[in-house]
Length: 162
Image 1: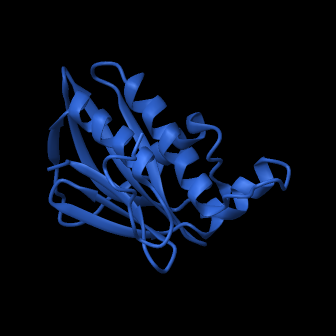
Image 2: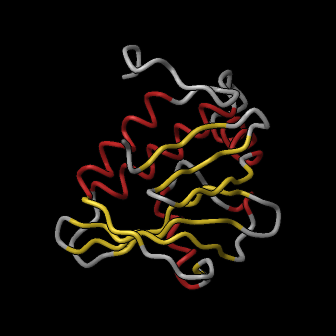
């Protein structure tokens, strides 16, 4: 069983399952940002946007040093964004779902360093629920999620996923 799965629902929302917690968020702005940031040449739209987002997550998690914390956005709503914060301790990662008063359109999916803006505004979901995972396994699960992502709530069969 995977600790992390990401999929697009039939309503074109992003669903993030992390351990025993699951959240669904808006990703309308991901489609718009993909088109805007690629010069209006986006053919794949939303799936491409989510893949770019997850690639940014991968970059941040693989570069995360011991004792550091990163913020990973997944809900790009009009008036706020939802985030996962990840704190590394040795080879473990403690994760918490939360939100920030940052508008979804203001987040660049091509620049993961812009995610640090959430640090000052991050509010954990209540009740606070901290989950801890083996970081290399979490990164592997994220790589699998990138490879298996397709539109409308389905995944590629495991034998064709990259």
